[in-house]
Length: 406
Image 1 (cartoon, rainbow, N blue to C red):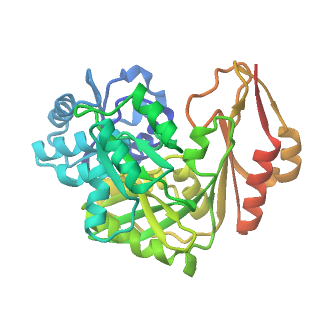
Image 2: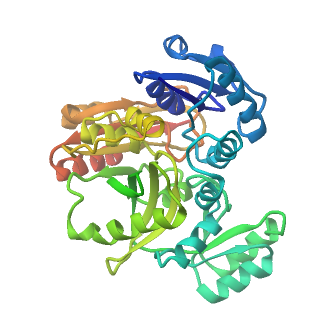
């Protein structure tokens, strides 16, 4: 019996899918450490947990350590500490080291979390990535812009996904940004070369010192374009065939990046660009499961529950690589206009056209406040053995379905 602690500061629906998968594994005694009260858990999941410890700050390593020690007293020890959020990976590593629990340590976790350090490490190991600088002042940012040119990408050094990430196209835009929110030594900003090309993910299982399995997903358009244009309904597409020569550059660069950053057993999420010349450039890497519905998409494409696969990998260090049987795609539905969701148009037409391809959906609710997230107010997932069928279906959805606000 393995004693494991899942740290989930806030009991969000997306996080609870991972918690539930871990709690359902045979041979696991699972305790949950959270900032939210136990009463917030769904009754079924609450009954499957073997312990719960509430802490005041679910992101603070000292509080997390207190919670893990509380569960350890109940269980008689803890073998693994896990969590699915990007922002948790360094605090979890600190607690592992403090308590002598196996898993990723602090130095590797910082490599993945600190985007400036990450790209420095990648560059030192010959892994292609964007030119970058951690700007501690307005002068740093201007100097880098003069060296690299425009456009540039600006982001926090410890960001997650595309939160607080934006594009600067001209010297005038740079001047306006620096006048309003300049970087300073206590609050530096990561400034990067803007990479052009098609954007993908490289999601991989790293086990016993090597990549043993990988997934490739394509973003249409890029996440940054979706953030810059809140009205855009975008797509994540998992093609069925990912073994062709067009993906050979990332099959080389992806594992090299994980080796350089110090990856240990787990599931990593990497974003990368295929540049116009066909070469790959790594954008960012997270030592955690992917977002943007890629986890359920991988589950549908492989007929394997990747929530459970991740939990099993993190607790038992085991993974049985699955075959990719389908292409899969998700269309993200986002509101247009201002106000609450007034209506959702085009659903009947889409149901008639592609209803037999739909395997999962969460539709926008009339009267609801629109989501501030770039993932929008709902989604539809489709799958089919033929990638072209899936791509046509997701494109038809974002062309046809319209979420009206008012």
